[in-house]
Image 1 (cartoon, rainbow, N blue to C red):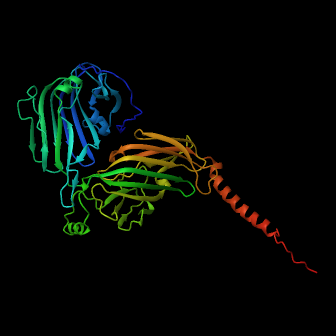
Image 2: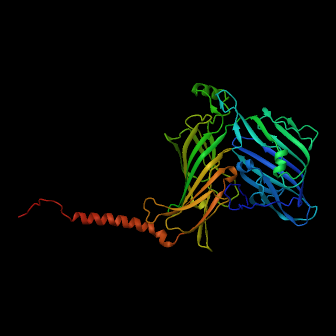
Length: 487
């Protein structure tokens, strides 16, 4: 099961515990940091050796800064597709680091080895430098991390590779006072890659003493040739209709350019000239491309001024919900104006899709099951605050839901719209710092009794009957003050 790291986690425990440092040894640690814009991908491989028979729980540690920035955390055994169970234990007894337990598929024997691959995605870990830029200037970002990968176990050797998207690296930190770990060059540069290490014979480092004495900040200042896209707010409403056999989804998206703020005034002439010569500044968002579900219809997209006509939509036919075919509809959307650094753009996107593409019926439990995606990912973007509201049919009971990762908060309410009598149950889920990894479906199950199916046609019939009855009675009432007498 894929698991997401978040501050409020259903698996979190406020345990002030220590780690048994003599149960494992790290024969090697290799960390690879792929720098980006809004997102930074980190892959850390731990070559682990068991020092005790029956060892099955391996502990990794994160600093406070890493914990705050980590939006996605997943661990696997190298070469195996299934993710391992991850348990957040909170901070250690000294408060120096954050502990995360990884359960191995089976207990290791004495001297047995295994390679654990830890994948994390960091959000809000890069910043524009300089903070302001003109339309002609390039964009540069900086990223800060720690020199050593902290671990509660002894490490024989470790190295860190930092890969920049561009070979143009303006500056990087050269660590000092590392005689205890290496006599070679502390950092080397080859093209777009910086390599820190190898550093040898590192004692257990997940403690306040090692951090204060040896841990050093590493800052990399690099050129970034793509826009930094952020979504400060995203509101999705999914409405399930049985009478229309339809699933309607509507997104209210607030887009922001997180790159360097525009210095000076915006020049339309300069922008058109750059576009003509295909030299548009890297920190400008000219448009976005979204992958929507197959089989959608009645698609609409508009902003505060009306329909966004500068767009292109290519739809694909519906596919069975259990199909492994990776098909999707493509929407190329171009805002009314180029989104410069620090600028915002808000728009609404919605569509209908056949309910059968995402719904099923469990005959044993007599419940409908509908899958609703958490959100539609925007490539290389982070969603700071997301809210998903799922509206069930009127009269639905025994509503349950399962999320692929914990929600920041949840609530249950009643949604009332036209021709409703008692209203429709709805659930609202809130999430923080979502990435493309979080674009997974939520499964909602519920029952709809026969009386609920008949409630709407009965209410419509009663409404028409009431109108006709009122008209019939009104025709027989004479409200005139002066009546004409006939002889």
